[in-house]
Image 1 (cartoon, one colour):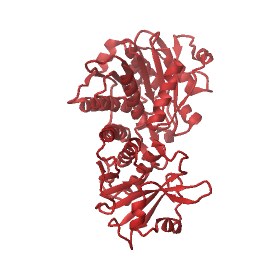
Image 2: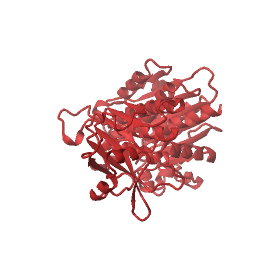
Image 3: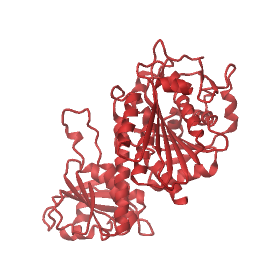
Image 4: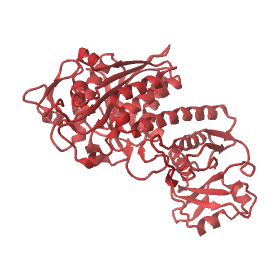
Length: 501
């Protein structure tokens, strides 16, 4: 829970108070806005203590100080680095989001925390609230033994600000709560082991999240998929005892004009099929449904925010397993709409279910289609584990998606769809092959998907294979494991469309 307060930090009954530490270009430490009252209560010794304890002021660094010998009732002061103070005097929203998330993670196990960070403008307060909410996360659904490294997240955060009663600020914090809930739900889904999240379970989760809202859900089982000609789903799921599902979520509020279609890859586990992955490469493949998780939870957030925009979400769910019934290299399958695909590699399965879903989404002629997927290892090679790639058949849309991502704090980078890569997808027996040349594999996958987007429709493809699952150390408000990548950008895009209508 995150609240706003006008109460002085000298009277707050918190377990810890967080203040910002800056660093000049020469390495000199300084206190950020919001720290003055805490410093005064400690008789002006904060910088002295910070220096003695080796605090650097670099963005993301944290240092704990015992609040003794002063008038501060809080036992602990946490100094969080903000880096160099900007010339304009106001820190970027993402700097504050990450600082708040870093602080809340560092104080896990505390019940109540107060943030005495720069909060003089509505955008700053909202950024702090959002970062704190995103940082207060832990996945322990399968943990039975408590360990020190998995302390419970902070239960309550108070942002100390003179804007505590400002209507716009309070509305922004309410929006942050909705976004954080959606991101947490996506993280939970991505972190859930594949043994507990089969395609039918992901579909059931979509129904549960939609219950009591204006969202309508339709699920196609294997019989419905067969009747509808969804050959990509049927082929990818053929090797598993857990059959595929295609989930359609529809939010169509009165007065909506623009129509946004969101498509998510939902491979609940990817073994590679008969083109089997190396064992070590399967460790994180429970996360191959992160695109579907982002779509499902983003649609719920859009409905909770009551945005006046029509949104249709498609979650393309299957489990890619090897067995006697699994699809084989050289098989030819028929995608929804009738186009045939030669399967050259069964580990290039995500594009097959996405092709089905893109055709289905196109049939409704939305204004924009955006698909999100953990699609290629080549994305991680190209951009690393924290930056997603954006490709599109429309330059303005690609720019828009990247701009929205930057605004909400997600790292997306524009990439091309070179026409010359299409020739590498030619097949001698079918309309197209599911694999092309080795180099530029991320772009080739995008070129493949473009073939299944309806003529004249604006479409963007987000490959977030790296950012969806954090295999490294936690940072900022991002935990280890499932990150909830894509959720905030999809909601932000819906907000932009609603504002333009």
